[in-house]
Length: 432
Ligand code: IMP
Image 1: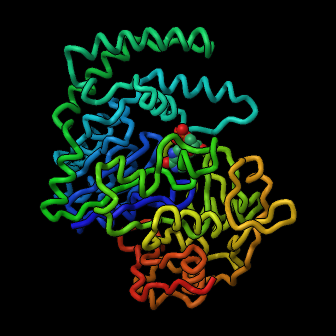
Image 2 (image 1 turned 120 degrees about the vertical axis):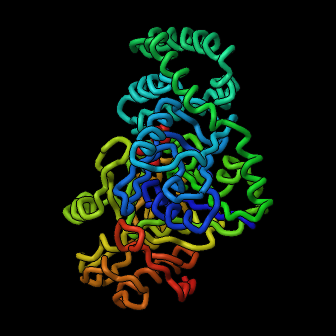
Image 3 (image 1 turned 90 degrees about the vertical axis):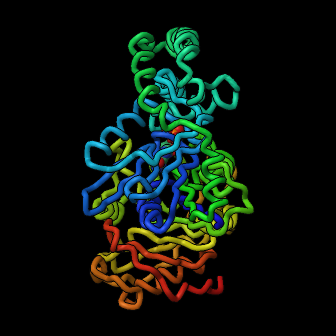
């Protein structure tokens, strides 16, 4: 049974958790492939609202095995606390597998993240300060600590003492920051490692065995493809690959085992942190979308920047990731707008360009070519069948599918599970 990838098609916060949660019910396994506690997935069920950072969104579906893959960077204290919170709310967390190859985010990584942002002065990236960049930097520099190392009681304490000592010198000397409390941090880390150890194992083999058995596997990417380290708006990106290729690598699945790549896109755009955002709105429309969409970060609480749907960026993402179909979320947020815009092209220095500039200073200067579309001006939150959706809303959905170059297969009209409307007649890829 081949696997399905769920990836963010924009700059993160597209509602991937909700889509994964919806698919998890009919899947045997959900694997998280990249990122760390910089991600925040909000899922609303009849048991209440769940906000998770590291635990795969499938945990809320009984019988679904949840895997934290080798491509994830894990803050062990955060993960242990998320599991404890879930258990306290009656969620069974026993079917969790944590890759022994996943790298560990240590407290000094967050402090280095903070120090790097400070050194960037006037143009910080606006990271989540969760230590993600420094942890991935240690991984590729081949001095990282993996879950297997942390759970090896005999070695871990000694190794951590050495690492904390070196990094505290760096923090004090280079970043002019306070050092991290070594003894207290190590005790906390080893305490978390003890709680997590029973779940730590050869995740890639667990995933491959599941595929061999014919289990339906969902691979869940964090962040969004426009934040990809290689193909995003570098340096205003995250430090992992939230792409279809990255999903394979992070989950331990071969590209030939992937059957479906669902690109999750919001009906408009949002971005947290700095970086180019051609369709950004600075007016009341932007504010109204932000309030209607509750666009405040799950991880940092920051107000998200808001803009119209960017079809140039979307088309790039569907092409680079082989997106087979689109889940279009938060369509109901646009219910109140008489006119909705879509960026169908970019202009730079008076010329039309069809792609995304490589240099972020150029990307910053891009003007979007906006196509106005009549709004539907109706509350669609109670719609449960695509055929019952107002014609103008369907036209908008169809236009997005056509411009992005992949059919829309489901539309979100609200936060609840039943507010995900399947598009039975898959939107044809209209002439571009
Ligand atoms: P980092 O991943 O914390 O290093 O942050 C790098 C950039 O990615 C910043 O602009 C963050 O706001 C953004 N980012 C990281 N994780 C998420 C996410 O889950 N949703 C949206 N933006 C994110």
